[in-house]
Amino acid sequence: MSATGATSEKVSGRLRGTARAATNALGRRATRWERSAHRHFLAVGSRVECPVCGWHGVSFAASRKPRRMNRLCPECFSSERDRALQLWLDRHPVRPDARILEVAPLGLLRPASERLGYEYTSVDLHSSRAEIRGDLCGLPFATGSFDVIACFHVLEHVPADVEAAAQIARVLRDDGEAVVIVPWDKTNDDTDEDFEAGPEERLRRFGQADHVRMYGRDVADRFRSGGLHVTEVLWRDVFSADDFRRCALRGDDDRFWICTPAGR
Ligand SMILES: C[S@@+](CC[C@H](N)C(=O)[O-])C[C@H]1O[C@@H](n2cnc3c(N)ncnc32)[C@H](O)[C@@H]1O
Ligand SMILES: [Zn+2]
Image 1: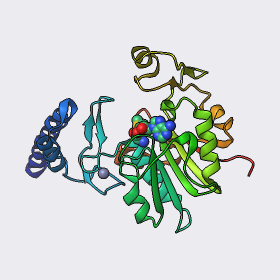
Image 2: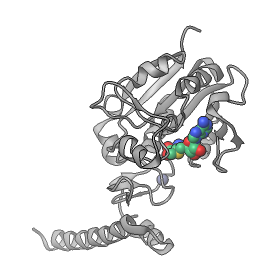
Image 3: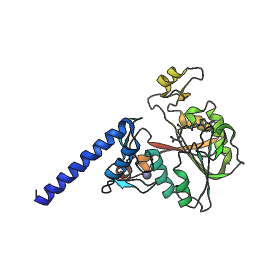
Image 4: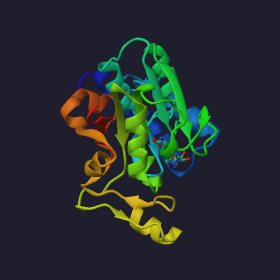
């Protein structure tokens, strides 16, 4: 190896070490200093790039729950599902004045929607991040209001998920689509749900104390019974190997359920 090669190897090794230290720190409990250090130390090169905010660096930060390296953007905190949605929207443009609804927003989709020229609204039953406080089972919007709805990791909290699916179908325009993600257990045919279970049992059976079910392989059937036409879109079928590496898309979520109003 040449002297220059050895030096650059040493430098990148040292940077990797620093990045690992910062990542480990984040993995435990990220203080403001650690987050800032992470943002700066990892912002070397462009091995990974966040399509949501444009940050790039050697690696994304680790997450604690789930415990995974290279997962959260240190700038905007996007996870793999936020980055996958951004790629999907960038590559499936809707009409310029499209209306987009985000259910249970984390605050990332508004700037992205505005960049694409869409009119953005958000709704949540409790969260103050949402512009409108409202229930997915009785959405406070007129029929046919939206071109796109993003609903990630919400329906597993909603007892009447079929009613929620029917509301999604109602507020979509005839040619609109909802992009839905729920956590699910690929090893179960049927959804396991129990409204009587206490918090500990929910944690054990559904993965979180505030979840009312763990979906099985019947996810799409449940949404269909709410009046949606459902297509499962696997990320590996629509995103390239380079997208996966660059945006760190590997994780528990690996698909969208693309839902359109059935029979309209
Ligand atoms: C785990 S957070 C999802 C946050 C985010 N979308 C994500 O991808 O991580 C679940 C959110 O669903 C909201 N939620 C639960 N039931 C709801 C309902 N019936 N209508 C609207 N929002 C609901 C909760 O208030 C909470 O903010
Ligand atoms: Zn970002």
